[in-house]
Image (cartoon, rainbow, N blue to C red):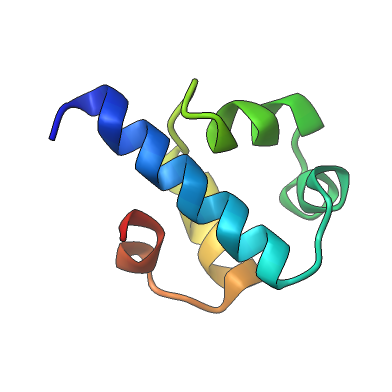
Length: 70
């Protein structure tokens, strides 16, 4: 798997988890203290979450880091 594919799969998983919590991108951005455009970039595979964001996402979604990369 190349880096682009990993970013896309991770982005889809983040979106899936966000929707399962009934959160809008703006709401997740507020929780993570970031810009909503950053959430959009993550979900579309245009960027990859930092270690800090991964930890925060795991808290929000009550999951382990490996669950973000399924």
